[in-house]
Image (tube, rainbow, N blue to C red; front, side, top):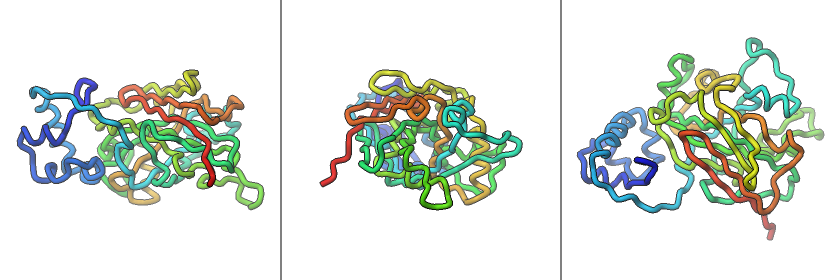
Length: 287
């Protein structure tokens, strides 16, 4: 994306010389991210070279920018959000990030519909900065985590609040049930490469419902920043290119306000430097 317009990467590559590895992956953002460590620097150089070309912008309907390998989420990672959810947190020095897993099949793109399942009456929104892994690794030190990031997306961690808790088992929380319905992970609108964004911990995050601002926070207020989350998660498993970490949401969710999504709503999530992700909300029709 140059000057906030869309251009065809295949056209650019056809007019400029590119390496074989990059040429073979043009046409699929999935393929670019899976091999980001090998081709990311060349792609950035290609973007700089393309600025000298006379290019015609293209019209395109945005989709989810790629299919993530896995989607991880950070729970209660902003103090004010934890407060509005009545979540009592230990001191950071006595704690670690709380990471859960969402299904990749729950991912949808800009303009696609979030479906309200009949099993839930309390479906909620959560705007989050999504960190896309471009270099895999295990036990990644905090001070090297930046090098493992390919780029960023917006993630809306849609959540069925009345299904994340259970009383029929001795286990009080069920994050899978509450967060992995089909369509519960809007993502986009673009994949923004790491070096195009700058500091990921100084970004304004906002979300409105039907034009009313609900969330307005800053990524600098995370309890565990993105690098600390990468370091922690990589002690549990090997991170892989294409993994996405939704790094937590600021205050302003529906649960804290006592209001929830309904048929006909529209959510608009915005993160400075990443873009705007809008999704309509409809009741799921059961046939």
